[in-house]
Image (cartoon, rainbow, N blue to C red; front, side, top):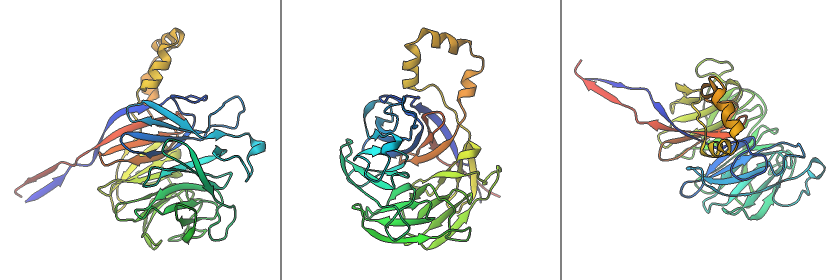
Length: 344
């Protein structure tokens, strides 16, 4: 008997979002997404420091079907971006994760703190102190909750992973600066699979590392470059229920897909169409509509990823890719593998 397995394929579904600096139904330089109850999404916009764009730093709550629910968080000007910055404010937000109660935790790499909000966006707490001691952080980026509801924090400049209770109590850490096994060079994204194993996007080392829940090194894959399985600053990582690994290859403008053993499977370059929110905005302006109609090849130019920075997956095989530069999410669905069998 000979068995063949067709490679994984991905069907483009739709695009969510558009550029919106003022809040409401859009994003402004989104950098992370978290999935909530039902079809809720929490999209974190990093925004810009330009004063006229207000309130561009925020978390937008919407559905996968692009229904706007609400937003929370507030931008602060540079002169107020100090450790005593007002509660619930952001300056350089980097990541968002939800605990088992649906509360949202947002990392800010400038303020060096984790802010906590209810699922509806009410501020309920914060923790974090800048430094390099146990429990101190320096430019936190990725966040991920384990099955025990402890929070794994990518402590980027300290080149380590730290694990805390939800209340911010330090539990343990691992890592260090370098390129050896278990070492990091400005790590960024993180995810935890169904077995509790931890995957880290080792940004400047252009690789992915996998660890046991206690930080024991398990494997690594990737190298610098533009070929299949190579990276140019990997940022986001996600692992689905089947163990398939997804990596946003930021400067190569693509999403790469790997098997559980780290072997390259395929890559996606983007298939975006105009989102529901984008279409609503365009239809309000006849001049914009005429301009789009005259622009040759516009639909093709709008398809590719630009600055894919984060990725998430759900149990329905949907893949959500966050594009920072184009202020949107592209949604794909993984197709089941096809098996062929027959006599030799």
